[in-house]
Length: 634
Image 1 (cartoon, rainbow, N blue to C red):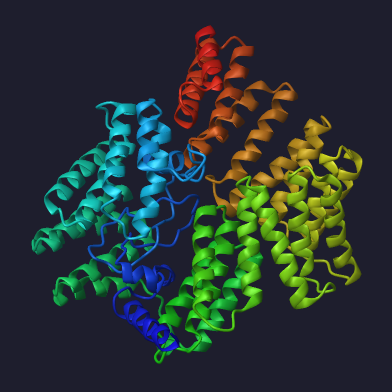
Image 2 (cartoon, one colour):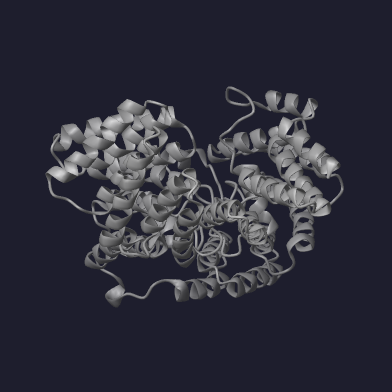
């Protein structure tokens, strides 16, 4: 078995070095050896770029011929307002919230269709097909793709819609994987026409489908036509500025031409790809790897999460290019993946973080002598992801396991124990275990006090203690604790750190609950200024702050200014996700317009709220009925 594993590692390394390039997501693409044996194939992956808000791929968005196994593709969204981003967030952001209590089947999905629950059927069909695709069961994906397409047409009729365009795109990819090139090309052409109508000729979703059509041309021997498709796709991505997606596309093209035994054509695109790779002296050494890795950790600690992510990617580029490859290559890949996942979590990309963390854990399972500290970091991040998704029971189990691991490894007096105590305490608070949660948070704070530590973690512990006091109705204590946390964040992290922005928001939230609207608004404005500088306009923290500022202004009687703040929040949120937050903002705007007899404006916003809620929950939901009644009254 050991000999077989060594041989499989060599084969994986060969694929990594010769076929897929050497950036971070190519390391992700090294799926398990068992998946390789099954011949599974999925889309090439790509790192999120400047504002990686949500997973955008679907597991088989990109056609890669008979490519080696890979993982669900995802990319950054510098222009997150395109229709496709809203499509993905609405359709896939809730993919784990299945309509059936157990694992859905084709039969259960068909039953949903029969009952007219097309939205739920689409979500479940995506979930099942995603799983089957990654297991190499491509033939079984086609009926599900047909269901998705049928549901989209039932929901949207003959009108062009991104749901339908993506359903056609993915149906085309599945058909190509089944070697049905004629029908695949027809589906992809239809998707391309629809996408161009919806988002224009210069959008990244158009570039993806163009590349998919180019791949069809390569597989059918129409190489000049393929180059034409590829050139158009590359031009769009160059102008868009998404280098990660451009690299991802070029790698797919190079791989396809090499498979078609057209090395001259592959070389042309390899040259472009080489220009995008980081330039390092002597081609990179193991010292370069560690330098980049440590720089990435430093950037993450500073709150520069994207820069940290870039460092981890470049570190893996160096690592996978090393000759000879280090014996502990898999362990180092795992280390980079886990740290990248933690960075993505801090950037709000929960799906991307989960993907990288799980891949890092898989890499660890393939080597002897697992780094327990890395494993604890990985599990801790998974616990945080579950907490943010509201899966508190799952998070509780993870944090309990991690705390036990840490205690066995480091003992009860180690300073790092505080972070695990804090996270476990927070989950207990979420579950309503107030006394248990506060006791754990206090234990975490005492651990740092005992060792004389004042760092970002110390400030986080105080902030969470303040939140616990707030939840328990101890308002004066909550104000004092949040003020202590804020001052500590400013001292140890700096006045413009993302954590400092959150501290301002936490203090503002307590002040707002005390009806201290002017003071609260000043806190929210301080947090908003930092969030805009760090994250840009399209970020949940920006939306949240604008929403709270709107409530403060309205309470202070500044109605026009409140409306402006709510509208800014809604505009930003619609570029991130057309979700419940957007629906609530529509309602806030409508309520203000209603109160000042702006009936037409109120009716428009109630209708917009109804539309969003219908997409999220179906037209039978009580909230949809209430919004429709309010619109009619207005």
